[in-house]
Length: 116
Image (cartoon, rainbow, N blue to C red; front, side):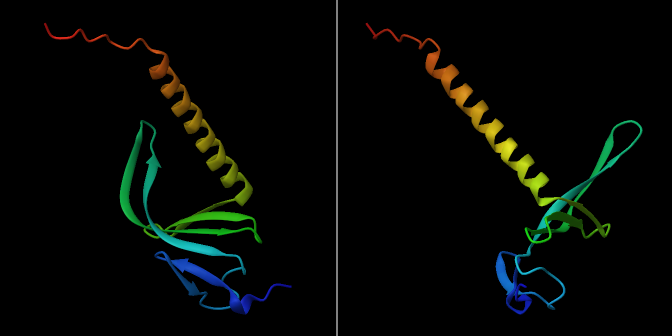
């Protein structure tokens, strides 16, 4: 059994003690952030923000959550799903960056004639 009395959370980049032992798991992390909320309409969408949000994560509970404090709405997915999406995004960005670098390295370089 984990010792929940020693748990810490992160608020605005600072690590602090959790408010009460039952609020967070021992490995729980919380960070305040800014978010933009998107409302999908029949034709298009409308974005609102930025406004305050909180991001929560825990391996113990296998959760990744984002709370929009403006609407007091929280969306939660498994931590494994969130990590998979982030990992794939980074991998694809690295591949695109490598391909772009390879394309510029393989491209013909302009020849500049010396001034006469």
